[in-house]
Length: 248
Image (tube, rainbow, N blue to C red; front, side, top):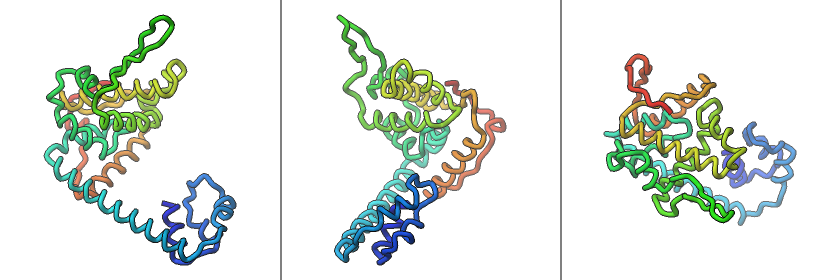
C-alpha cells in the first residue's frame, strides 16, 4: 500500500524524494533516508505513462478479484455456518475457508475419516529409511490447490503466538527443519478441518497462551471482511449457545 501511494504521486508529477518517502507507512522497515535515496532517480514522462498503465491494470484486477470474491460468498451463502467454523482456526482466512469448502464440501461427506481426506489431498506425512537412504511417504498426487491453501494457512497459523500450531511448530523445527515441520502442521490442520466440517463442531483453541487481544483482532478482521462482502453478522458467545467442542 505504501508503494502504491508513492507510485500514484509519482504519476501525478511529484519528484521530491522527501515528499515521496513521507507517504510510506511507519511499519515499513526501510528508513526514511533509504527511501529518499531510492526515490531520487530521474523520472521521465514515458516512465510516468508506463506507471499509470500498470496502476490501472492493478486497479482493474483488484476490482475483478473483489467481484469474484463477492460472487463466491453469494454461492456459499447457504454454508455460512461451515465458513464461520473454519475461520475460527488460527491462520485460516475467509477466502481460504471458502476455497476449502468449495473443494471438500460443507460437511466433507465424501471422506469417512480424516485419513481419507489427507490421502485425497496428498498430505500423508512420514518417512522410511532403506540402505541409509530416506524416502518420503508424501504422495506426489492429490489436490494441488488444496495443498497450496493448506500450506499457506499452516504458515499463517504458526505465526499466531500462543496457538497450538505455534507451539507444535517450535517443537518440531529442531527435529524436522522448517519445511517438514510446516508439512506436519498442514496435516494437523487438515485433520481439524475434517473434524469441524464432518462433525459440525466449533474450534476451541487448546494453546497454553491464548492471547485475548489477538483473538479480538482476528474477530474484527473477519467481521470487516464479511461486512465488505455484504453480510450483516451478529456475534454470540460460545458459552451462550453451548456448541459441541472440537479438540485439537
